[in-house]
Image (cartoon, rainbow, N blue to C red; front, side):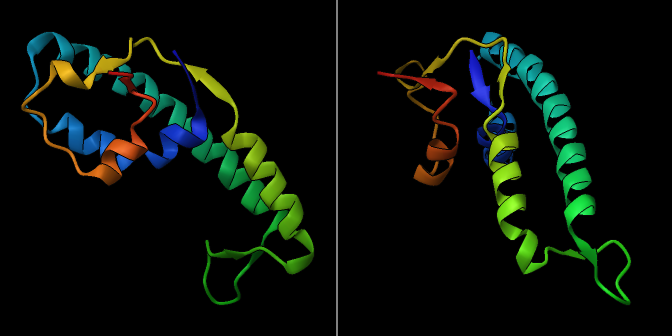
Length: 121
């Protein structure tokens, strides 16, 4: 499956909670493998995001490592972030059928953030 990196980023906490859930062995293994790939993609995303922040941002005086995006650079920053978040990455995982996991309990918020992971039922 192809998933936009922005969707992976927004779903990272929900995926971590899902990884802490008891699942059938086969599915747990598939998710664990996919999670390793996702973690690598998110590391690359963070590197690029931080590079962009350093390029267009201004370091906050007295707070090393903290940056503000100046008003005149906000549009550029937002456009470049949107482009970065839209990059699709391949994930070796077939969509999961929620119906196949009747005992799985998730919040609607987590389900929404992981909608790319679940197939239509």
